Length: 116
Image (cartoon, rainbow, N blue to C red):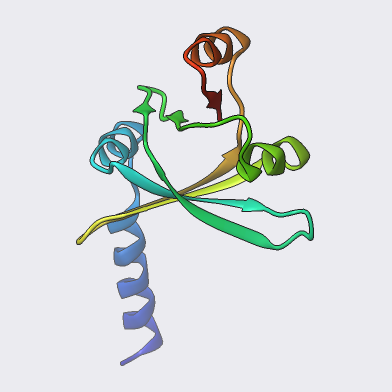
């Protein structure tokens, strides 16, 4: 194959994976479990499966866990988070900081959980 043909095929694959924010929200809502990847105390990656509690219209993802888990202390040290969701024919990978609003955190804590 020519370089020009390969470049055209590469652009086509990129176009196929370009999604709107609504597409991302819809896709995220199709998953019930995600792998959360954090940074451990030694700087290494740590992955764990988590149930998806909620997906907001703005694509914020909510997970609920106990306040005594290593996950909470890891995020307190380093808020960088990678979330990977995978199904039979699709996947979603989102990277960003773990955070919550004070009001949302208080509400979830009143239920006995920590918010990620």
